[in-house]
Length: 330
Length: 238
Image (cartoon, rainbow over all chains, first blue to last red; front, top):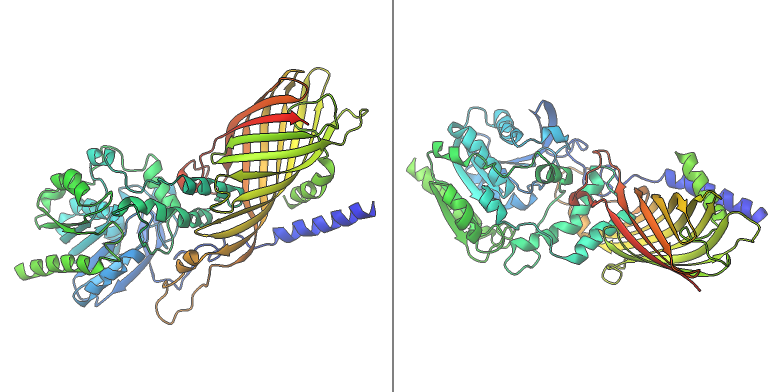
């Protein structure tokens, strides 16, 4: 009897102790805190979809220079991979940010993440940092869709447009696209087994789990199925979920406004590596035919992520040439 | 909530001297081996060895034992769970009854994000209709990993680097150490059992296995949820 009482006392203490243990959702425990949780992060508050939100945003160069806005992909990714493009700050005022709910930006509700809100987000940042100025826009993957969509809605606000391996822009492309698929049985098994120990109470735990699956998903974007280096701070799992698994995801008839891009009079640059699901082959077959006035530059040996890592010099040279040619024409 | 958890944790080891939930062998003290192959939705193999501790006079059958649960990533990720188990079952003369299983476990996993050890408990209850040769019941469960020790990988540490402008210290991380209440999930399904003899029975359970979160129940891969499970169990009296 005495032994049982000691056990009960011991177990009570253990239980109360575990109730006081730190929470996995506390900012900085599992994943870096967002701009809404960490005022030291470079950020900007914008009002989109009726809510004021803090987006993680960094600027490079003189604000008096022409603005160059750079958008990451995902949906859900941050701009860490795209940092090599800050090199254009010698001639441009380069602005990079993570979309609301993605990367290190403040997390948002499902209602705020409509496709229509993304051009509004670009416009809000333009109003705050480059009011009245025409933009040079550069987007990667999902971000390329967003900048194309913005250009279709506000062609008069755009000076130049750079699309780096956009995802499928039409339904036909969507049906023939396998980017981001996870082919490893072991990774899928591990992903679900984690629920024995860690379930997604809120954003932090869900975003944390992306660390295990993103490298595997990126295999589809490489030459030989190898894992590509993909530096990132934090992936917005809920952002990704809403824009890929719910009725708010771009539907099969959604085309990012590419029919309206004829209103944009300048040449568009499309850059693609020769490898992977979103490479030059895919772009030639499914996106380029729907983008009149677009020149494609292919970087041999590059994949979706390695364009910014192993092949960043080649990427910068291609973009640099496009920017310079345009400036000389003017 | 703390009170409920406390009572469950403290009294579970004492209450769950039990009987396997799914059948009632002729000899209550007969050792049993239960082997389950399940999709949760990951493929897992569960093996439990129990022995009866009930005297013939009691209306409730109790069994105690231990076991393991292993996924296919046992060797690649050193993923495993070991547990102590206890069960109890009781059937009224009108054939309505309830069986309950409980587990207190230590679970481990290691992947790109880091290494985690978790301590938790799981309770499953099967209220239903129990006949000598077969039974149908609900399969209700609650699993809570109440304390976990996390050691982050270099890959996770890298996600914290280069976030701030020069000279800003900011919030450090990630934090290695103990965390409370890291996993919480529920099971709702149906269970059917066929007893082929006094020593052998076969059971199938099917239902939903889900975790709740602030954004609602998001049934998608992004949140590691495909909220279904299918479990087949063979029970052998030894």
